[in-house]
Amino acid sequence: MNQRSGSSSDLEALSPWVNELAQTFVSLSSDIALVMDASGVISRVEQSGGTPMAPEAAQWVGRSWADTVTAETRRKIELLLGDVASTGLARRREVSHPGGAGTDIPVAYTAIRLGTGGPVLAVGRDLRAIAAIQQQFLDAQQELERGYWRARQAETRDRALRQVVTDALLVLDAEGGIVRSTNAAAQRLGTDTSPLGRPAVLLFDAHSRAAVDELLVTARSGGRPVELRARLAGAHAYVSVAATPFRVGASQRLLLRLRDPTEGEPSAAERRRLAAPGNAAVVITDAAGHVRACDESFAALVGQPGEAALVGRPLSDWLGDARQPLDVLLADTRREGLAEREGLALRGSATAHGARVSASWLTEGDQEGIGLVVYPGDTNGLAAAPQRAFLQAWEALDGQLGRSSLTQMLREAAALAERHFIQAALQRCGGDVAAAAELLGVSRDTLARRRRGRRTPRQS
Image (cartoon, rainbow, N blue to C red; front, top):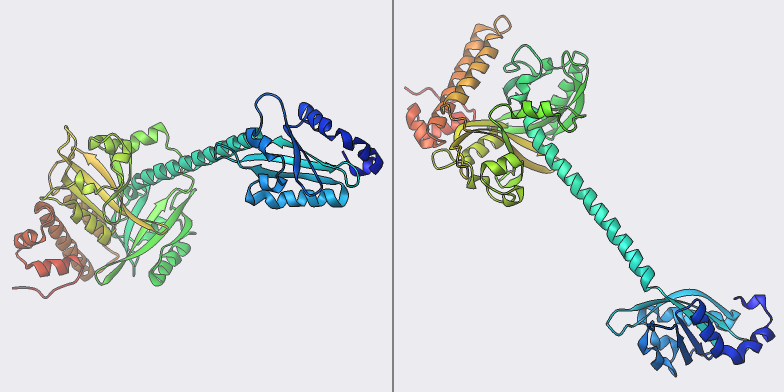
């Protein structure tokens, strides 16, 4: 209804029938109708049949319309009455009446004045049903968003666990870029020669070597992680190459991480390949050794119902003992970038008493942590890991024949032998530095300095 669509006299003619009009509106299209004077004092209230929208509305007679709504929407009533006073017709506005049960009743009102100086008729629609539908829509939308983020978090977690096994890791001397140690994945890079003892840039295609070399220089000089894409030697696809600097005593090292950037969900064959050596389980901790994530295999391995039972708890509750404390492995990983232990005690399982554990330092964004691959029941002797590492390094040193001088190779052989015997002694003594020093016939301070890479004067 529009004041401009009829003359003022037409509306004034309807003025005596305002109460009947109010009844008609609520019976046809509205939930409530109010009759009031120009100042907004209510003289009649009509509600639709059945359950009234606001049972207490009968008490509004004699009250100002603005006094029947909440304080937050009182201004809208004033605007409605102002529109009626100036034009005779007020546009639709949504207000709220206080409800008897402590909940507000949202109502959309329009109002019209029946002639100059005539009564004002306001009709309203109850918006609670619409509000409920809108709330259901918002709840469904929020649940979809929560589901999406849960799926994203689960995908990120699964990818992180998978990358602990699949990422190729190499520890390099920062100055020369020579590979000092690797994880198992780096040994499967597709080259015929072990990367140990070789410049890391030789692992890459000739066209990528300059960029990789610049990456190593930038990481070394800038002291922060850097990343690029490069192509491996003999390969067509590119890999993501990240270099993270860290220090071992006075020496600077680089942790080089190689990852397939297009890696998706592994196939069944790939999962079998990853799990082949002793049904490996994976767990990720924070830098202090508290569990951040694990796969179902690890939860079952330690007799827990699932990941939720482990997250936030120290991994040492299930891995390591007084003979071989987990803290020693974690400290070596933080210091060296990579570390491995044989025969580490495994608790919570009725079938496995020991495990071989390979650990790697993780740096993803601002978070630092440690990824551990656990091979249960692998207790073939405490010296197996040092012996394998020694043989790999010796093979790499033998490959330098003709490229390095005898003096240089002898110096590297002596350093290699020293590292091997120190590691073997620590393994045999369960990480006890004092016991390992006694086994090697040196002082504890001397052993600590040699582990940090510092040379000491020869003892007689």
